Image (cartoon, rainbow, N blue to C red; front, side, top):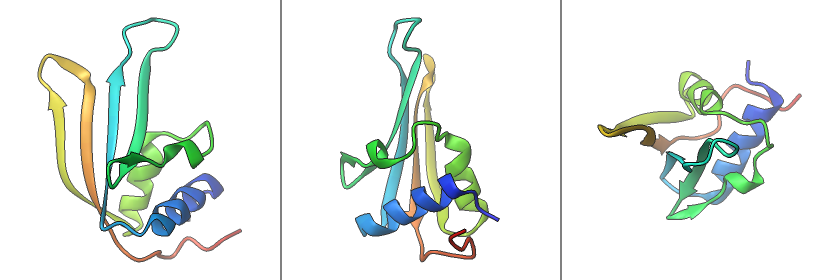
Length: 98
């Protein structure tokens, strides 16, 4: 069963209407800021609409649920925090609204 956060992310991705999304992360280089992450849809970030506590694990849950399918994953060999994971987007699945 999906959490309320995961359902909200799923619904926002579905609303965007794109065939794929890209999860991106990078180290900002400052200890107080750490790693920044976002989700791009058509080259535009949509994760500003997600709750502040979302994580990559929420996308992994959507993948397990069948809404997302991992197409490719890349990690910079010189910077493990610089990543891009591309997902194909399917139709909304089992996680009903609470």
